[in-house]
Image (cartoon, rainbow, N blue to C red; front, top):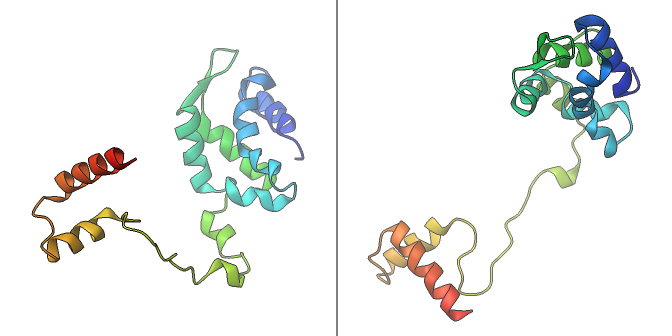
Length: 153
């Protein structure tokens, strides 16, 4: 299958109705072609987790023009099987085939200059508590800190 329209036509033959009943689901599965028009775009949604994500996006069922309720998962399974030689891979099946590159690992934390807290505010709050600069609880400290920031701006 090369185009979402072909998948939609296949769905209409399999579940009834017309291709436009299914087009949005098939467009969603193939939306990653916008970024990479190679078969590897399928790693984004053509797997078991993608089927469940499609349900979250489109609902558990759609009602086709013939009045029949069709599970979205069935539509997604049909799409993935047509593109993946009859199987439904897991996300792990795709991810374990990624060739690691140096930029993918060993991230770093940017150093932060200035008096404003950066990142997790609990760290800044705990530091102020330990230094005796506040007795406020985290929620109250964050509210006071936000008020000070807006008054200073």
